[in-house]
Image (cartoon, rainbow, N blue to C red; front, side):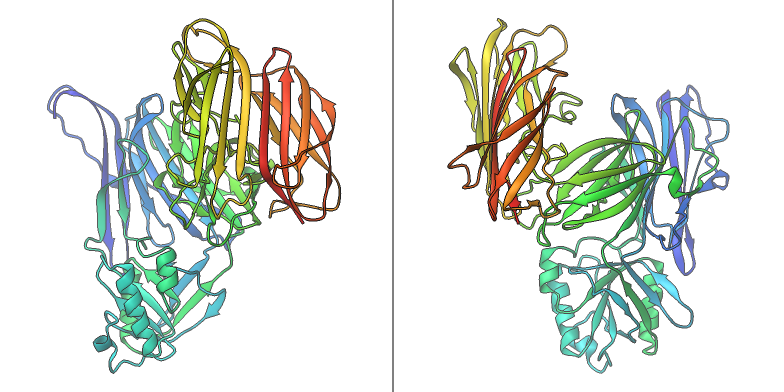
Length: 612
Protein backbone atom coordinates (compact mmCIF):
# COMPACT_ATOMS: atom_id res chain seq x y z
CA UNK A 1 0.00 0.00 0.00
CA UNK A 2 1.18 3.59 -0.53
CA UNK A 3 2.43 5.54 2.47
CA UNK A 4 -0.40 7.24 4.36
CA UNK A 5 -2.85 7.01 7.23
CA UNK A 6 -5.16 4.01 7.28
CA UNK A 7 -7.82 2.45 9.45
CA UNK A 8 -7.78 -1.33 9.26
CA UNK A 9 -10.68 -3.67 10.04
CA UNK A 10 -10.25 -7.41 9.79
CA UNK A 11 -12.83 -10.11 10.36
CA UNK A 12 -12.62 -13.81 11.08
CA UNK A 13 -15.48 -16.27 10.65
CA UNK A 14 -15.06 -19.53 12.51
CA UNK A 15 -17.25 -22.55 11.67
CA UNK A 16 -18.86 -24.32 14.61
CA UNK A 17 -20.07 -27.90 14.02
CA UNK A 18 -23.85 -28.00 14.25
CA UNK A 19 -24.06 -24.27 14.97
CA UNK A 20 -23.93 -21.03 13.04
CA UNK A 21 -20.40 -19.68 12.69
CA UNK A 22 -18.95 -17.21 15.15
CA UNK A 23 -17.67 -13.86 13.90
CA UNK A 24 -14.89 -11.65 15.20
CA UNK A 25 -13.97 -8.15 14.02
CA UNK A 26 -10.79 -6.36 14.99
CA UNK A 27 -9.61 -2.85 14.15
CA UNK A 28 -6.41 -0.89 14.01
CA UNK A 29 -8.00 2.57 14.35
CA UNK A 30 -5.16 4.53 12.74
CA UNK A 31 -2.07 3.13 11.07
CA UNK A 32 0.46 5.79 10.04
CA UNK A 33 2.25 3.88 7.31
CA UNK A 34 5.66 5.36 6.54
CA UNK A 35 7.74 2.19 5.98
CA UNK A 36 7.40 -1.55 5.56
CA UNK A 37 5.27 -2.78 8.46
CA UNK A 38 3.52 -5.88 9.74
CA UNK A 39 0.17 -5.57 11.53
CA UNK A 40 -1.21 -8.50 13.48
CA UNK A 41 -4.95 -8.71 14.10
CA UNK A 42 -5.29 -11.33 16.82
CA UNK A 43 -8.99 -11.97 17.37
CA UNK A 44 -8.21 -13.84 20.57
CA UNK A 45 -7.90 -10.33 22.03
CA UNK A 46 -11.53 -9.46 21.24
CA UNK A 47 -14.51 -9.41 23.62
CA UNK A 48 -17.94 -10.97 23.17
CA UNK A 49 -20.79 -8.64 22.18
CA UNK A 50 -24.14 -9.34 23.88
CA UNK A 51 -27.08 -7.50 25.42
CA UNK A 52 -29.99 -8.56 27.59
CA UNK A 53 -32.76 -6.81 29.52
CA UNK A 54 -34.65 -7.48 32.75
CA UNK A 55 -37.58 -8.99 30.85
CA UNK A 56 -36.74 -12.71 30.48
CA UNK A 57 -39.09 -13.41 27.57
CA UNK A 58 -37.31 -10.80 25.41
CA UNK A 59 -34.87 -13.08 23.61
CA UNK A 60 -35.48 -12.28 19.95
CA UNK A 61 -34.55 -9.45 17.63
CA UNK A 62 -31.26 -8.62 15.95
CA UNK A 63 -27.91 -7.04 16.67
CA UNK A 64 -25.07 -5.39 14.81
CA UNK A 65 -21.52 -4.22 15.32
CA UNK A 66 -20.08 -1.27 13.39
CA UNK A 67 -16.43 -0.18 13.23
CA UNK A 68 -15.63 2.96 11.25
CA UNK A 69 -13.95 6.32 10.90
CA UNK A 70 -15.27 9.84 10.47
CA UNK A 71 -14.24 11.47 7.19
CA UNK A 72 -15.96 14.81 7.75
CA UNK A 73 -19.30 16.35 8.70
CA UNK A 74 -21.83 13.51 8.72
CA UNK A 75 -19.53 11.40 6.51
CA UNK A 76 -18.23 8.04 7.67
CA UNK A 77 -16.76 4.85 6.29
CA UNK A 78 -17.34 1.62 8.13
CA UNK A 79 -17.70 -2.14 8.25
CA UNK A 80 -20.98 -3.46 9.63
CA UNK A 81 -21.61 -6.95 11.01
CA UNK A 82 -25.25 -7.98 11.69
CA UNK A 83 -25.92 -11.03 13.81
CA UNK A 84 -28.59 -12.74 15.91
CA UNK A 85 -27.23 -13.45 19.36
CA UNK A 86 -29.65 -16.39 19.77
CA UNK A 87 -27.77 -18.31 17.10
CA UNK A 88 -24.43 -16.59 16.51
CA UNK A 89 -21.51 -15.33 18.57
CA UNK A 90 -19.98 -11.94 17.80
CA UNK A 91 -16.65 -10.62 19.11
CA UNK A 92 -14.96 -7.23 18.59
CA UNK A 93 -11.77 -5.45 19.65
CA UNK A 94 -8.92 -3.13 18.73
CA UNK A 95 -5.21 -3.85 18.45
CA UNK A 96 -3.78 -3.28 21.94
CA UNK A 97 -2.18 0.13 22.42
CA UNK A 98 -3.88 1.75 19.41
CA UNK A 99 -6.57 4.44 19.16
CA UNK A 100 -7.70 7.34 17.00
CA UNK A 101 -9.94 10.35 17.55
CA UNK A 102 -11.56 9.64 14.16
CA UNK A 103 -12.42 6.02 14.97
CA UNK A 104 -15.84 5.00 16.30
CA UNK A 105 -17.54 1.82 17.41
CA UNK A 106 -21.20 0.96 17.79
CA UNK A 107 -23.03 -2.07 19.14
CA UNK A 108 -26.75 -1.93 18.43
CA UNK A 109 -29.44 -4.34 19.61
CA UNK A 110 -33.14 -4.40 18.73
CA UNK A 111 -34.61 -6.84 21.24
CA UNK A 112 -38.16 -8.16 21.48
CA UNK A 113 -40.10 -11.25 22.37
CA UNK A 114 -39.96 -13.40 19.22
CA UNK A 115 -43.18 -13.20 17.26
CA UNK A 116 -42.41 -16.57 15.65
CA UNK A 117 -40.27 -19.41 17.01
CA UNK A 118 -39.52 -22.83 15.53
CA UNK A 119 -37.86 -25.73 17.31
CA UNK A 120 -36.85 -29.24 16.40
CA UNK A 121 -38.08 -31.52 19.20
CA UNK A 122 -36.12 -34.75 18.87
CA UNK A 123 -33.88 -36.01 20.32
CA UNK A 124 -33.48 -32.69 22.16
CA UNK A 125 -35.05 -29.28 21.49
CA UNK A 126 -33.02 -26.90 19.31
CA UNK A 127 -34.06 -23.50 17.85
CA UNK A 128 -34.16 -22.78 14.12
CA UNK A 129 -33.87 -19.26 12.61
CA UNK A 130 -37.20 -18.68 10.91
CA UNK A 131 -39.38 -16.01 9.34
CA UNK A 132 -42.98 -16.12 8.16
CA UNK A 133 -43.44 -15.83 4.40
CA UNK A 134 -46.51 -13.92 3.38
CA UNK A 135 -49.29 -13.80 5.92
CA UNK A 136 -48.37 -14.25 9.62
CA UNK A 137 -49.12 -17.64 11.13
CA UNK A 138 -52.20 -17.99 13.35
CA UNK A 139 -51.40 -17.13 16.97
CA UNK A 140 -50.80 -20.14 19.21
CA UNK A 141 -48.56 -23.17 19.74
CA UNK A 142 -48.56 -26.38 17.74
CA UNK A 143 -46.38 -29.51 17.60
CA UNK A 144 -46.72 -30.99 14.11
CA UNK A 145 -44.97 -34.15 12.94
CA UNK A 146 -42.25 -33.56 10.36
CA UNK A 147 -41.83 -34.83 6.81
CA UNK A 148 -39.18 -34.10 4.17
CA UNK A 149 -40.64 -33.19 0.79
CA UNK A 150 -37.50 -32.66 -1.27
CA UNK A 151 -38.06 -29.80 -3.72
CA UNK A 152 -41.83 -30.11 -3.37
CA UNK A 153 -42.47 -31.41 -6.88
CA UNK A 154 -45.09 -34.16 -7.32
CA UNK A 155 -42.36 -36.71 -7.95
CA UNK A 156 -40.58 -35.64 -4.72
CA UNK A 157 -43.75 -36.07 -2.68
CA UNK A 158 -44.77 -39.40 -4.17
CA UNK A 159 -44.60 -42.09 -1.51
CA UNK A 160 -43.90 -39.59 1.31
CA UNK A 161 -46.37 -39.39 4.17
CA UNK A 162 -46.98 -35.63 4.48
CA UNK A 163 -50.60 -35.71 5.63
CA UNK A 164 -51.21 -33.16 8.44
CA UNK A 165 -47.44 -32.64 8.80
CA UNK A 166 -45.01 -29.75 8.62
CA UNK A 167 -43.19 -30.44 5.35
CA UNK A 168 -39.59 -29.27 4.91
CA UNK A 169 -38.68 -28.32 1.33
CA UNK A 170 -35.07 -27.88 0.19
CA UNK A 171 -35.09 -25.34 -2.64
CA UNK A 172 -32.45 -23.47 -4.68
CA UNK A 173 -31.35 -20.17 -3.14
CA UNK A 174 -32.76 -18.23 -6.12
CA UNK A 175 -36.27 -19.70 -5.89
CA UNK A 176 -38.92 -17.21 -7.03
CA UNK A 177 -42.21 -16.52 -5.19
CA UNK A 178 -44.07 -18.07 -8.10
CA UNK A 179 -42.10 -21.32 -7.88
CA UNK A 180 -42.52 -21.43 -4.12
CA UNK A 181 -46.28 -20.99 -4.51
CA UNK A 182 -46.39 -23.93 -6.92
CA UNK A 183 -44.46 -26.19 -4.53
CA UNK A 184 -46.60 -25.20 -1.54
CA UNK A 185 -49.73 -25.94 -3.59
CA UNK A 186 -48.31 -29.37 -4.40
CA UNK A 187 -47.73 -30.06 -0.69
CA UNK A 188 -51.33 -29.10 0.02
CA UNK A 189 -52.61 -31.45 -2.68
CA UNK A 190 -50.78 -34.29 -0.94
CA UNK A 191 -52.34 -33.39 2.43
CA UNK A 192 -49.56 -31.37 4.08
CA UNK A 193 -50.51 -28.82 6.74
CA UNK A 194 -47.55 -26.41 6.76
CA UNK A 195 -44.31 -25.75 4.85
CA UNK A 196 -40.80 -24.83 6.01
CA UNK A 197 -38.77 -23.62 3.00
CA UNK A 198 -35.00 -24.08 3.27
CA UNK A 199 -32.99 -22.17 0.67
CA UNK A 200 -29.31 -22.94 1.41
CA UNK A 201 -27.25 -19.99 0.13
CA UNK A 202 -24.58 -20.49 -2.49
CA UNK A 203 -22.09 -19.35 0.18
CA UNK A 204 -22.55 -19.95 3.90
CA UNK A 205 -21.41 -16.37 4.45
CA UNK A 206 -21.75 -13.55 1.94
CA UNK A 207 -19.46 -10.57 2.21
CA UNK A 208 -18.91 -7.30 0.42
CA UNK A 209 -22.51 -6.23 -0.13
CA UNK A 210 -23.01 -2.46 -0.24
CA UNK A 211 -24.82 -1.11 2.78
CA UNK A 212 -27.76 0.97 1.61
CA UNK A 213 -27.91 4.54 2.88
CA UNK A 214 -24.36 4.76 4.12
CA UNK A 215 -21.88 5.92 1.44
CA UNK A 216 -18.61 4.07 1.66
CA UNK A 217 -19.78 1.43 4.10
CA UNK A 218 -19.58 -2.32 3.65
CA UNK A 219 -21.45 -5.18 5.23
CA UNK A 220 -20.51 -8.73 6.18
CA UNK A 221 -23.50 -10.88 7.11
CA UNK A 222 -24.03 -14.47 8.14
CA UNK A 223 -26.85 -16.51 6.65
CA UNK A 224 -30.32 -15.53 7.83
CA UNK A 225 -33.87 -15.70 6.48
CA UNK A 226 -34.20 -13.25 3.62
CA UNK A 227 -37.16 -11.16 2.60
CA UNK A 228 -36.97 -12.17 -1.04
CA UNK A 229 -40.10 -14.28 -0.80
CA UNK A 230 -42.19 -12.00 1.39
CA UNK A 231 -44.80 -9.43 0.43
CA UNK A 232 -48.33 -9.20 -0.85
CA UNK A 233 -47.69 -11.49 -3.81
CA UNK A 234 -46.44 -14.31 -1.59
CA UNK A 235 -49.16 -13.74 0.99
CA UNK A 236 -51.87 -14.04 -1.61
CA UNK A 237 -50.37 -17.00 -3.49
CA UNK A 238 -49.39 -19.35 -0.67
CA UNK A 239 -52.16 -21.79 0.18
CA UNK A 240 -50.57 -23.14 3.38
CA UNK A 241 -48.88 -21.49 6.37
CA UNK A 242 -45.26 -21.14 5.24
CA UNK A 243 -42.00 -20.18 6.91
CA UNK A 244 -38.45 -19.80 5.67
CA UNK A 245 -35.66 -21.38 7.71
CA UNK A 246 -31.93 -20.63 7.58
CA UNK A 247 -28.61 -21.14 9.33
CA UNK A 248 -26.82 -24.27 10.53
CA UNK A 249 -29.82 -25.48 12.48
CA UNK A 250 -31.93 -25.39 9.30
CA UNK A 251 -29.85 -28.28 7.98
CA UNK A 252 -30.25 -30.07 11.28
CA UNK A 253 -34.01 -29.48 11.09
CA UNK A 254 -34.14 -30.86 7.55
CA UNK A 255 -32.18 -33.93 8.67
CA UNK A 256 -34.70 -34.50 11.45
CA UNK A 257 -37.52 -34.27 8.90
CA UNK A 258 -35.81 -36.88 6.73
CA UNK A 259 -36.11 -39.43 9.51
CA UNK A 260 -39.88 -39.33 9.20
CA UNK A 261 -40.26 -39.61 12.97
CA UNK A 262 -39.33 -36.09 14.13
CA UNK A 263 -41.64 -33.42 15.47
CA UNK A 264 -41.46 -29.64 15.64
CA UNK A 265 -42.75 -26.94 17.94
CA UNK A 266 -44.14 -23.78 16.34
CA UNK A 267 -44.99 -20.76 18.50
CA UNK A 268 -46.69 -17.75 16.90
CA UNK A 269 -47.41 -14.70 19.03
CA UNK A 270 -49.51 -11.58 18.38
CA UNK A 271 -48.03 -8.26 17.35
CA UNK A 272 -44.99 -7.11 19.29
CA UNK A 273 -46.00 -5.05 22.33
CA UNK A 274 -42.66 -4.55 24.10
CA UNK A 275 -39.50 -3.70 22.19
CA UNK A 276 -36.02 -2.41 23.05
CA UNK A 277 -33.67 -0.24 20.97
CA UNK A 278 -30.25 -0.36 22.63
CA UNK A 279 -27.13 1.39 21.39
CA UNK A 280 -23.65 1.40 22.94
CA UNK A 281 -21.32 3.79 21.07
CA UNK A 282 -17.67 4.54 21.73
CA UNK A 283 -14.93 6.61 20.12
CA UNK A 284 -11.18 6.12 19.89
CA UNK A 285 -11.19 2.33 20.24
CA UNK A 286 -13.45 -0.64 20.90
CA UNK A 287 -14.35 -0.83 24.62
CA UNK A 288 -13.00 -3.76 26.60
CA UNK A 289 -16.46 -4.56 28.04
CA UNK A 290 -19.08 -5.37 25.41
CA UNK A 291 -21.57 -7.46 27.39
CA UNK A 292 -24.48 -5.34 28.62
CA UNK A 293 -27.27 -6.18 31.05
CA UNK A 294 -29.77 -3.33 31.04
CA UNK A 295 -32.62 -2.49 33.40
CA UNK A 296 -35.75 -0.66 32.28
CA UNK A 297 -35.01 2.08 34.81
CA UNK A 298 -31.85 2.94 32.85
CA UNK A 299 -33.79 3.49 29.62
CA UNK A 300 -36.32 5.96 28.24
CA UNK A 301 -39.84 4.49 28.11
CA UNK A 302 -41.67 5.44 24.92
CA UNK A 303 -45.29 4.68 24.11
CA UNK A 304 -45.55 4.49 20.32
CA UNK A 305 -49.09 5.25 19.14
CA UNK A 306 -49.96 4.42 15.54
CA UNK A 307 -53.01 6.32 14.29
CA UNK A 308 -54.91 5.18 11.22
CA UNK A 309 -53.19 2.84 8.77
CA UNK A 310 -54.69 -0.45 7.59
CA UNK A 311 -53.73 -4.10 7.18
CA UNK A 312 -53.13 -3.37 3.47
CA UNK A 313 -50.84 -0.41 4.23
CA UNK A 314 -49.23 -0.90 7.66
CA UNK A 315 -46.39 1.25 9.04
CA UNK A 316 -42.77 0.27 9.63
CA UNK A 317 -40.61 2.10 12.16
CA UNK A 318 -36.91 2.87 11.78
CA UNK A 319 -34.86 4.38 14.64
CA UNK A 320 -31.33 5.79 14.30
CA UNK A 321 -29.18 6.74 17.29
CA UNK A 322 -27.44 10.03 16.44
CA UNK A 323 -24.18 10.60 18.31
CA UNK A 324 -21.89 13.46 17.28
CA UNK A 325 -22.69 13.22 13.57
CA UNK A 326 -22.61 9.42 13.57
CA UNK A 327 -25.70 7.31 12.86
CA UNK A 328 -25.98 4.02 14.70
CA UNK A 329 -28.56 1.31 15.26
CA UNK A 330 -30.18 -1.67 13.57
CA UNK A 331 -32.15 0.57 11.22
CA UNK A 332 -28.84 1.53 9.59
CA UNK A 333 -29.13 -1.81 7.81
CA UNK A 334 -32.62 -1.02 6.57
CA UNK A 335 -34.14 -3.36 9.15
CA UNK A 336 -37.33 -1.63 10.27
CA UNK A 337 -39.56 -2.82 13.09
CA UNK A 338 -43.17 -3.55 12.04
CA UNK A 339 -45.55 -0.90 13.33
CA UNK A 340 -49.12 -1.47 14.45
CA UNK A 341 -52.47 -0.62 12.91
CA UNK A 342 -54.51 1.68 15.17
CA UNK A 343 -52.75 0.43 18.30
CA UNK A 344 -50.00 1.31 20.80
CA UNK A 345 -46.75 -0.37 21.79
CA UNK A 346 -44.31 0.14 24.66
CA UNK A 347 -40.69 0.63 23.63
CA UNK A 348 -37.50 1.31 25.58
CA UNK A 349 -34.53 3.31 24.26
CA UNK A 350 -30.97 3.99 25.23
CA UNK A 351 -30.89 7.65 26.39
CA UNK A 352 -29.80 10.10 23.71
CA UNK A 353 -30.94 11.63 20.43
CA UNK A 354 -32.94 9.34 18.16
CA UNK A 355 -34.04 10.08 14.62
CA UNK A 356 -37.22 8.25 13.60
CA UNK A 357 -38.52 7.35 10.17
CA UNK A 358 -42.02 5.89 10.00
CA UNK A 359 -42.49 4.30 6.58
CA UNK A 360 -45.83 3.38 5.09
CA UNK A 361 -45.67 -0.13 3.62
CA UNK A 362 -48.17 0.56 0.86
CA UNK A 363 -49.43 -1.99 -1.63
CA UNK A 364 -50.08 0.74 -4.21
CA UNK A 365 -47.50 1.88 -6.77
CA UNK A 366 -47.00 5.13 -4.84
CA UNK A 367 -44.59 5.29 -1.94
CA UNK A 368 -45.52 8.38 0.09
CA UNK A 369 -46.69 8.50 3.66
CA UNK A 370 -43.23 8.60 5.28
CA UNK A 371 -42.99 10.58 8.52
CA UNK A 372 -39.77 11.86 10.11
CA UNK A 373 -38.96 13.17 13.56
CA UNK A 374 -36.16 13.49 16.10
CA UNK A 375 -36.39 13.18 19.88
CA UNK A 376 -33.98 13.65 22.78
CA UNK A 377 -34.78 10.83 25.23
CA UNK A 378 -33.64 10.79 28.87
CA UNK A 379 -33.12 7.82 31.21
CA UNK A 380 -36.03 7.11 33.53
CA UNK A 381 -38.40 9.43 31.66
CA UNK A 382 -41.63 8.45 29.89
CA UNK A 383 -42.73 9.73 26.49
CA UNK A 384 -45.63 9.29 24.10
CA UNK A 385 -44.96 9.59 20.38
CA UNK A 386 -48.05 9.61 18.16
CA UNK A 387 -47.64 8.84 14.46
CA UNK A 388 -50.02 9.73 11.64
CA UNK A 389 -52.41 11.43 14.06
CA UNK A 390 -54.79 14.11 12.77
CA UNK A 391 -54.49 16.87 11.77
CA UNK A 392 -52.13 16.38 8.83
CA UNK A 393 -51.03 19.65 7.24
CA UNK A 394 -48.11 22.08 6.68
CA UNK A 395 -45.42 21.93 9.38
CA UNK A 396 -41.87 23.20 9.80
CA UNK A 397 -40.53 21.07 12.67
CA UNK A 398 -36.93 19.88 12.30
CA UNK A 399 -34.74 20.36 9.24
CA UNK A 400 -34.26 18.93 5.80
CA UNK A 401 -32.00 15.97 5.23
CA UNK A 402 -30.71 17.56 2.01
CA UNK A 403 -29.10 20.00 2.11
CA UNK A 404 -28.17 18.69 5.54
CA UNK A 405 -29.77 20.59 8.43
CA UNK A 406 -31.27 23.22 6.14
CA UNK A 407 -34.61 24.87 7.00
CA UNK A 408 -37.60 23.85 4.90
CA UNK A 409 -38.04 27.27 3.25
CA UNK A 410 -34.91 29.42 2.92
CA UNK A 411 -33.51 32.52 1.29
CA UNK A 412 -29.96 32.20 -0.01
CA UNK A 413 -27.84 34.84 -1.70
CA UNK A 414 -29.60 34.25 -5.02
CA UNK A 415 -32.52 31.88 -4.45
CA UNK A 416 -35.73 31.24 -2.57
CA UNK A 417 -35.64 27.47 -2.01
CA UNK A 418 -38.94 25.87 -0.93
CA UNK A 419 -39.48 22.30 0.30
CA UNK A 420 -42.52 22.47 2.59
CA UNK A 421 -43.75 19.35 4.44
CA UNK A 422 -47.42 19.67 3.50
CA UNK A 423 -48.41 16.36 5.11
CA UNK A 424 -46.87 16.65 8.59
CA UNK A 425 -48.92 14.83 11.23
CA UNK A 426 -50.57 16.29 14.32
CA UNK A 427 -47.45 15.74 16.42
CA UNK A 428 -45.33 17.65 13.91
CA UNK A 429 -43.55 14.68 12.33
CA UNK A 430 -42.74 15.97 8.87
CA UNK A 431 -43.77 14.52 5.52
CA UNK A 432 -43.51 16.14 2.11
CA UNK A 433 -45.66 15.33 -0.89
CA UNK A 434 -44.31 12.45 -2.96
CA UNK A 435 -43.26 14.20 -6.18
CA UNK A 436 -42.87 10.88 -8.00
CA UNK A 437 -46.27 9.48 -7.01
CA UNK A 438 -49.25 9.88 -9.34
CA UNK A 439 -51.49 10.13 -6.27
CA UNK A 440 -49.85 13.39 -5.11
CA UNK A 441 -50.35 16.37 -7.40
CA UNK A 442 -50.38 20.12 -7.03
CA UNK A 443 -48.38 23.30 -7.63
CA UNK A 444 -46.31 26.03 -5.99
CA UNK A 445 -46.18 29.69 -7.06
CA UNK A 446 -44.34 32.80 -5.91
CA UNK A 447 -45.61 36.38 -6.35
CA UNK A 448 -43.34 39.45 -6.00
CA UNK A 449 -44.96 42.79 -5.25
CA UNK A 450 -48.30 41.41 -6.40
CA UNK A 451 -47.11 39.95 -9.73
CA UNK A 452 -46.51 36.29 -10.52
CA UNK A 453 -42.75 35.71 -10.28
CA UNK A 454 -42.68 31.99 -11.06
CA UNK A 455 -44.51 28.71 -10.60
CA UNK A 456 -43.79 25.00 -10.68
CA UNK A 457 -46.18 22.05 -11.01
CA UNK A 458 -44.94 20.43 -7.81
CA UNK A 459 -46.78 20.53 -4.45
CA UNK A 460 -44.70 22.25 -1.77
CA UNK A 461 -41.47 22.15 -3.77
CA UNK A 462 -39.91 24.91 -5.90
CA UNK A 463 -36.72 26.93 -6.36
CA UNK A 464 -36.84 30.54 -7.58
CA UNK A 465 -33.94 32.83 -8.54
CA UNK A 466 -34.77 36.00 -6.61
CA UNK A 467 -33.53 39.60 -7.12
CA UNK A 468 -31.30 41.03 -4.40
CA UNK A 469 -33.59 43.98 -3.61
CA UNK A 470 -35.95 43.50 -0.67
CA UNK A 471 -39.57 43.07 -1.69
CA UNK A 472 -42.92 41.77 -0.53
CA UNK A 473 -43.68 38.16 -1.52
CA UNK A 474 -46.70 35.88 -1.54
CA UNK A 475 -46.04 32.14 -1.67
CA UNK A 476 -48.89 29.75 -2.54
CA UNK A 477 -48.99 25.98 -2.70
CA UNK A 478 -51.58 23.26 -2.84
CA UNK A 479 -51.56 19.47 -2.86
CA UNK A 480 -54.25 16.94 -3.61
CA UNK A 481 -53.70 13.37 -2.45
CA UNK A 482 -55.67 10.52 -4.02
CA UNK A 483 -54.46 7.36 -2.32
CA UNK A 484 -56.41 4.50 -0.69
CA UNK A 485 -54.13 4.71 2.35
CA UNK A 486 -54.79 8.45 2.85
CA UNK A 487 -58.50 9.05 3.56
CA UNK A 488 -57.78 12.31 5.42
CA UNK A 489 -56.20 15.64 4.39
CA UNK A 490 -57.11 14.90 0.78
CA UNK A 491 -56.52 18.54 -0.18
CA UNK A 492 -54.09 20.88 1.56
CA UNK A 493 -53.54 24.47 0.45
CA UNK A 494 -51.67 27.37 1.98
CA UNK A 495 -50.35 30.84 1.23
CA UNK A 496 -47.87 33.05 3.06
CA UNK A 497 -46.94 36.71 2.76
CA UNK A 498 -43.54 37.96 3.91
CA UNK A 499 -40.70 40.31 2.98
CA UNK A 500 -37.29 39.09 1.85
CA UNK A 501 -34.10 40.45 0.36
CA UNK A 502 -30.49 39.53 -0.36
CA UNK A 503 -28.82 37.33 2.27
CA UNK A 504 -25.10 37.69 2.88
CA UNK A 505 -23.41 34.48 4.02
CA UNK A 506 -25.38 31.43 5.17
CA UNK A 507 -28.95 30.88 4.04
CA UNK A 508 -31.73 32.26 6.23
CA UNK A 509 -35.05 30.63 7.13
CA UNK A 510 -38.04 32.51 5.73
CA UNK A 511 -40.51 33.94 8.29
CA UNK A 512 -43.36 31.57 7.35
CA UNK A 513 -46.15 31.07 9.89
CA UNK A 514 -47.31 27.57 10.87
CA UNK A 515 -50.81 26.71 12.12
CA UNK A 516 -51.12 23.32 13.84
CA UNK A 517 -54.23 21.56 15.17
CA UNK A 518 -54.13 18.83 17.83
CA UNK A 519 -57.69 17.58 18.37
CA UNK A 520 -58.24 14.73 20.83
CA UNK A 521 -58.83 12.02 18.22
CA UNK A 522 -58.76 8.28 18.79
CA UNK A 523 -56.43 5.85 17.03
CA UNK A 524 -58.79 5.87 14.04
CA UNK A 525 -58.36 9.68 13.82
CA UNK A 526 -62.00 10.19 14.83
CA UNK A 527 -63.57 12.65 17.29
CA UNK A 528 -67.02 12.59 18.93
CA UNK A 529 -69.85 13.93 16.80
CA UNK A 530 -73.05 15.65 17.78
CA UNK A 531 -71.83 18.29 20.23
CA UNK A 532 -69.36 21.02 21.11
CA UNK A 533 -65.73 20.09 20.57
CA UNK A 534 -62.59 22.07 21.41
CA UNK A 535 -59.55 21.91 19.09
CA UNK A 536 -56.21 23.18 20.45
CA UNK A 537 -54.42 25.39 17.89
CA UNK A 538 -50.83 26.64 17.93
CA UNK A 539 -49.31 29.31 15.70
CA UNK A 540 -45.54 29.61 15.36
CA UNK A 541 -42.94 30.81 12.87
CA UNK A 542 -40.31 28.79 11.05
CA UNK A 543 -37.41 31.13 11.82
CA UNK A 544 -38.03 31.54 15.56
CA UNK A 545 -40.24 33.31 18.12
CA UNK A 546 -42.93 35.66 16.86
CA UNK A 547 -45.63 37.88 18.34
CA UNK A 548 -48.87 36.45 16.94
CA UNK A 549 -51.47 39.20 16.58
CA UNK A 550 -54.43 37.48 14.93
CA UNK A 551 -55.98 34.06 14.41
CA UNK A 552 -59.28 33.12 12.76
CA UNK A 553 -60.48 29.52 12.44
CA UNK A 554 -63.34 28.18 10.33
CA UNK A 555 -64.80 24.68 10.00
CA UNK A 556 -66.60 22.95 7.16
CA UNK A 557 -68.69 19.78 7.37
CA UNK A 558 -69.31 19.35 3.63
CA UNK A 559 -65.77 18.97 2.29
CA UNK A 560 -64.92 22.67 2.13
CA UNK A 561 -67.99 23.93 0.26
CA UNK A 562 -69.40 25.99 3.14
CA UNK A 563 -67.43 27.38 6.11
CA UNK A 564 -68.55 28.37 9.61
CA UNK A 565 -66.49 30.58 11.95
CA UNK A 566 -65.30 29.02 15.20
CA UNK A 567 -65.01 30.79 18.53
CA UNK A 568 -61.29 31.29 19.23
CA UNK A 569 -59.74 32.04 22.62
CA UNK A 570 -56.14 32.22 23.81
CA UNK A 571 -52.97 34.24 23.27
CA UNK A 572 -49.22 34.08 22.59
CA UNK A 573 -49.54 31.45 19.88
CA UNK A 574 -51.68 29.02 21.90
CA UNK A 575 -55.41 28.97 21.30
CA UNK A 576 -58.58 26.89 21.50
CA UNK A 577 -61.13 26.77 18.69
CA UNK A 578 -64.65 25.78 19.75
CA UNK A 579 -66.53 23.82 17.05
CA UNK A 580 -70.06 22.46 16.86
CA UNK A 581 -69.84 18.95 15.37
CA UNK A 582 -72.68 17.28 13.48
CA UNK A 583 -73.38 13.65 14.34
CA UNK A 584 -71.35 12.07 11.52
CA UNK A 585 -69.09 12.92 8.59
CA UNK A 586 -65.75 14.70 8.63
CA UNK A 587 -64.35 18.09 9.62
CA UNK A 588 -62.36 20.41 7.35
CA UNK A 589 -60.42 23.33 8.83
CA UNK A 590 -59.34 26.74 7.55
CA UNK A 591 -57.26 29.33 9.40
CA UNK A 592 -55.87 32.83 8.92
CA UNK A 593 -53.04 34.14 11.11
CA UNK A 594 -50.74 37.17 11.31
CA UNK A 595 -47.81 38.37 13.40
CA UNK A 596 -46.50 41.75 14.51
CA UNK A 597 -43.95 41.84 11.67
CA UNK A 598 -46.66 41.73 9.02
CA UNK A 599 -46.25 38.08 8.04
CA UNK A 600 -49.53 36.30 7.31
CA UNK A 601 -50.79 32.87 6.33
CA UNK A 602 -54.02 31.28 5.17
CA UNK A 603 -54.23 27.48 5.30
CA UNK A 604 -57.04 25.03 4.58
CA UNK A 605 -57.22 21.26 5.10
CA UNK A 606 -60.10 19.27 3.59
CA UNK A 607 -61.19 16.19 5.58
CA UNK A 608 -58.93 16.94 8.55
CA UNK A 609 -60.48 14.28 10.81
CA UNK A 610 -63.53 12.03 11.03
CA UNK A 611 -66.56 12.11 13.30
CA UNK A 612 -67.88 9.03 15.05
